[in-house]
Length: 294
Image (cartoon, rainbow, N blue to C red; front, side, top):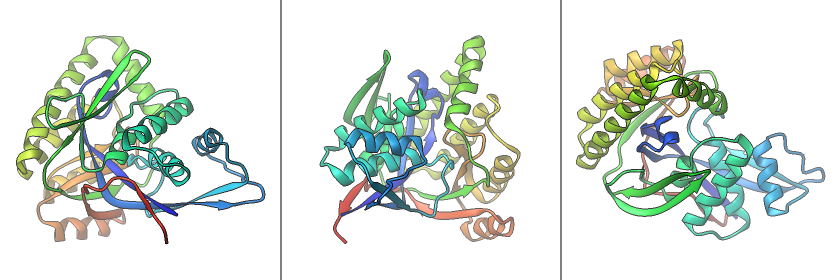
């Protein structure tokens, strides 16, 4: 059996979701193929892969991942691989998979939210801590609770651009936490991001690309205050706003990827490729993780 695991983007609300504010994420039509291959040594270098195999009681197994997306791109790579390993060996409900994959990721990183594992498991648009949509499940960790719902709407065309450098979720979340603990400014920013997310959900449900882009721009401006953008991200965002409805970093920041709602896709793709960026012309997808025989 081969597991097909989607990458994901966060349209609104990254970092704020760690503190219980709403966030809107979506699975994207960039699927990795994940295989478990017998191996004499079973040597794995990644801590979250080691922990997942240990959870399953597996030895002498090598995890092969086929994807065009670089790790550290902010597109949920670790969650996608953890969920893929679990699903390759056992049958889980979507909720069970989201929970178990998050537990493993949290134990490995020591921080974070279950937004990635829930989005990869459920597919489509997933709202965290919001009032819209069809309820999915809730997950609690260390006194913080996240509730998830599915947002029924049409898929959204996206251009995803890798900035050329990896972002560390652990480092960026820790950086924002220090900022958050210093005083009220960070809390005010988080509250504004939460309001942007709620407005963004309504725009997504109505399919209003121009409004979605406008709100993405606002969300990005708020995130910049935390110092998690980079020079390369800002260059991409500038191009994205010129030829798209809006652009923002996605994920923890400090590197990683930018998402753009394209307006003039031909010119947008041409300019980005001229600048030698790795570009993915894609869209959101209603499909979550799945497995099939090959």
